[in-house]
Length: 629
Image (tube, rainbow, N blue to C red; front, side):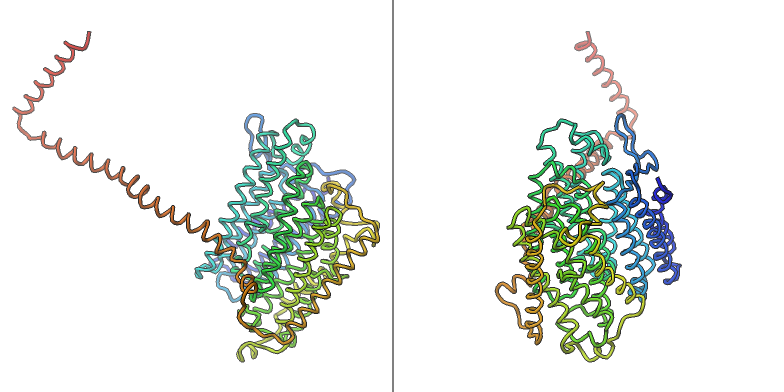
């Protein structure tokens, strides 16, 4: 093993130290100092991650897990606290620490006026620590600790401005919906432990082909793990928490929805690819759920007016594409899209933050327009993000999204055509957002117009870096028709191997690319023509349904939330107050009543006491005479 691989424990340790320093001294520490500590610790992790990445890339043999200490030892069960250093984890380390560092730098300016800035950086460091633990764990238990950690941190960060009741409700919603998915993950882990006696990745995957268990067991384990992934990665039916998570500060949205937390489900399924390849039925479920999520979220995004809500539903839709890739067995393609998505979605979220910053907190795109004249850098970088997510050739999203669609076509043309529909909607709603925000004439107040300005360097520099990555990031995964060497697929091949045959004839592949590009360009032109002179009339019919997000939240409220609340009130009134409290209070009253009666025997008259004593002796004598033989 190389030098950096031995230092892998430092990668999560640095953010943990940053969290402890900022978390303990947040009331006394100057804001700028807290920001510096937050940024430096993540940058240190990034430097070591870079070293690990190149060591893994140049290694001739896989590295064994780095065991730090024995974590749980009971009988035959041995679960070490160990880190897995391989192609998959090293790539995710770079994404998390690299994009995470840029978001930290951005936050130093964006959160500068907030009195809780140091506490914010403490939470941000803890979030990155948990995510690093999740991707580094060499067994499902360490992954689960990180999995729960990011759930806790998302709750703290989404509800960061906790004085606003709506924000705290959004945080609780994220927490509860993630717990539902986490239960599935936990049951899946217990099934693995029960059937295979281990939670270690290497031991489990080695046993998959040798251990004789019913085929249904693989399906059940794969299904339980997928339920965990639907919660964390916001897939139907557990996706409604993610758009509400926009309540947190914008850099938090970028961190949660771009590079880290929501990709945890993709990472877990890609890591468990050997299991899913033995459960083809569950892979079909994954593909269908992913595709339906991609389409439903895209339809909702078309009619949203909050700049961050559009991007949130866009994230749900793109995650659906990743699950579609996983479902057709293209694990490396899914990971490739995770990487490119981290670049352009972080860019778009941070770009929206720059707009909100310039607009004095305004998020309604109906009150924007013409911002490009005042914010050249933000406009240019945001345009690059839009081109990348729309799949325009030359940008990173083109390569990863087309790879997903091509693999879907090889698996089933129906999946491809539906996927193209979702991709067309993506191009439409992203350019609708771009044109309404940056083009045309300004529609806000005179005061907002007066304060319009480009954001400071701490905000624009991360935008520029992410814009460059959004252009060049796709060239590591060139399709077969462009290059024989797909860098990311060959890099991941020792760990993640695709399931099924996805080979297409060159002519077919070129045709598929041309179709998706032409479709995207048509939708961009359509978005321009519709929004050239925007006329915001109240939505009716289907448009109103889309604006209200298919009324899914209202349906959940009616069939889940209200019945549970009514049942809780019933239990509170009858089981709790009249039942449990009634028994406890009844015992107290009975003892008190008995005490009041027994107290009468304590009369203070010696003659009465002697009489009682004699009567007791007579009773004892009678008992011994009649019953004791």
